[in-house]
Length: 180
Ligand code: BTN
Image 1 (cartoon, rainbow, N blue to C red):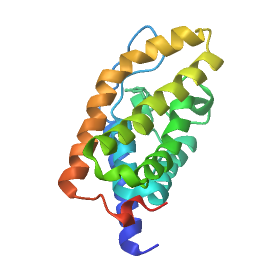
Image 2 (image 1 turned 90 degrees about the vertical axis):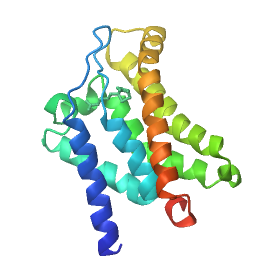
Image 3 (image 1 turned 45 degrees about the horizontal axis):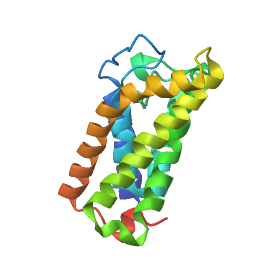
Image 4 (image 1 turned 180 degrees about the horizontal axis):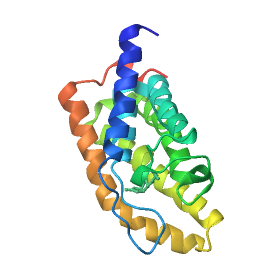
């Protein structure tokens, strides 16, 4: 990995941390808030590609695991990985690989395909994994968890569109970025 790539990866990790500083919005009916970090996760996947994107998110999660207050509301520590939001954290780790895989398919040249791939992997996949995890670790039913998670879809969709527009603006749809 070149020094510029290391710096780029570290900058994206820093961006995810900065987005954490935007106060989370509690929903009340589930123990999972609306956050802005997932915009940074999608950005990492699209700008850095599958390998460096996974590295940037792994770095972020490692900081959280060892106690740096980088999770929503300045939280951290191993307990949060087993708690109600653990599934989303797992989903975040898978996002760059899934987006990278999707974008590397032949139909990526269509704009709607790119946006759909970002949405499916960065929003739907994460919210579904998060819902199932929430069901497993809390008294909430699976249906209740899935239905509650629908509350995240509008804002998460806007975040996916924002990431897509940034990517279009930066013209980063090249083989280097999406190579698996
Ligand atoms: C954390 O504690 O930092 C993790 C919070 C996870 C929140 C999830 S990410 C997907 C969905 N969209 C949101 O805005 N919130 C949830």
